[in-house]
Amino acid sequence: MSDTLGMVFIGIGLFFDFVGCLGLVRLPNVYNRLQAATKCVTLGTCSILFGVFLSMGFVAAGIKALLCIVFLVLTAPVSAHAIARGSHRSGIRLTEKSVTDAYAEDDEGEA
Amino acid sequence: MKAKLVLFVVVFLVWLGLSWSVDVQHLVVGAVVSLLVTAAAAGMFRRTPRLLKRPGRYFYFLFGYVPLFIWEVVKANFDVAYRVLNPVLPIRPGIVKVKTDLKSDLALTFLANSITLTPGTMTVDVDRENGFLYVHWINVKDPDIEGATRLVAGRFEPLLRKIFEPEEESE
Image (cartoon, rainbow over all chains, first blue to last red; front, side, top):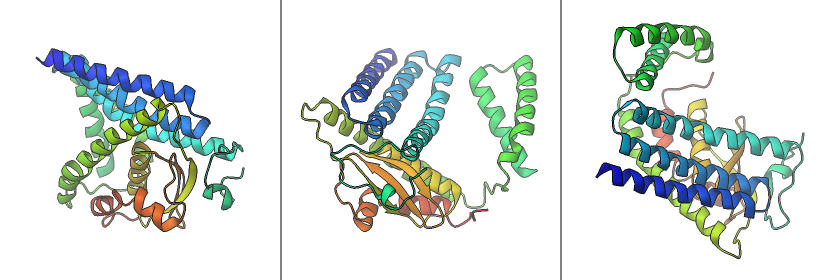
């Protein structure tokens, strides 16, 4: 039973990881790509890890998977934030389709 | 001293989770490693922790913030999946300013991370002095400050204020 459930979670995770990678290819620039990469890959990988925990149960590997979820949720947004801030400061503009750029207007994002 | 003790206990618990077997060998090695990590990293956590001062915030955190966060993350993923799989690529990107009156490091970190993992938004920078967050929004619905604040941060801010704000002063 928990084995099947684990497989279901791993399947969901694979789907979202795939969507994240597709977004990395299809979206126009670094900021939009980061959106897809952080959101989908975080949930996708967390879902895979949770599936691993469900099918392994309370053994060393399962608990390690649970701890990895915590670390992933804490670190993924921070790295995305650092990459986005760094790219804006090194002068990468938003796409032409963009509506507004309050960051550049305030001269905050200039290097 | 208290901060070091708390850090030691947390590190030791993580070690126990990672090794997941309770025998003398693991416990001794774990204690030594935890001591080393505590000695190396204690300088990063200078404030004295007040763990049990207001137990109510753990309740709010576990039953208020965590379910909301998981729900928003799932919604965010379906949102991204819809945008990526749609052949037209329906995006309207832009960076908006969001006002916040949270002040402490921890609360701002949680707010920024929550914004990053929720639908269509990603925190780019934090302006602590004036209380602004710069948020990249994949589908800008409202470019001015008030509207963006309500739409982006409105769900998390009251809850985070309840959990983190009253007892902490930024250093």
